[in-house]
Image 1 (cartoon, rainbow, N blue to C red):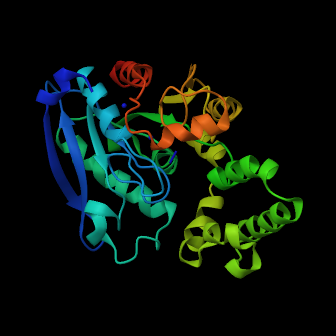
Image 2: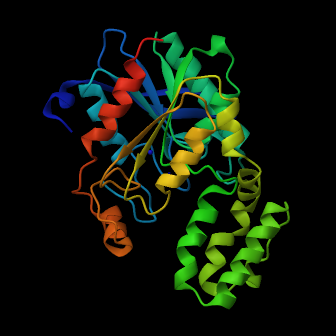
Length: 305
């Protein structure tokens, strides 16, 4: 999923906006504290994650909305978007699974143009923005790039997810999953029936095209090619992306600023290191986003360059 509730935020202007998509509009929510505030584009993480940061697979509590409200209280405007084919952007394409990273990057460019027209400074967030930022010409208006809980590995979340699963799976089951991942890395399709039934949903044929394209991306090379200032925010109890992953991504970009925040997980919530207790926080909507995340991002976005 790889993406910050103060009373003062409630009075800030929040509006639903759209921009042109491939076949229909792309939709987003803009929170604007005014006075030509610097701005951040919040890009949803993987899977069916909406602009507020909720996911039908078990993530609740609106972490992107809460981040946006915290940033607004710190004088930063935010645009949190729905990905093409999903939620408010459903009409943009007929099949939300028929996408590539380049498609998502093009949408980010469109939203950055939208924000520039409103005299905003656009920065990226989350994994998709790595591709968008590395290909951005100076005239695009982007002043920096912020990434949170992003993997430096070419196969990203899949590799990390299976690293977590390895201790829990019988050796033969894990070997089958690794073989399937290897086929995708080689740009070959996988028959879901060829993997153990519990793992078959991870290899849904509808999303394999996107998975193949995702695995072709090299985050380290993209970070190295990015000509913009970069901030990397990483929770130290993140069980999906580790501190070493964040350090590897930061090392690829000379001058990247790495902020490690103790005691927070992949959803920017206070969480213990114990995997089971940590994962339980994903479904607990009452746990707020740690304000240290918004503070780090606001300082970065507001810095004059």
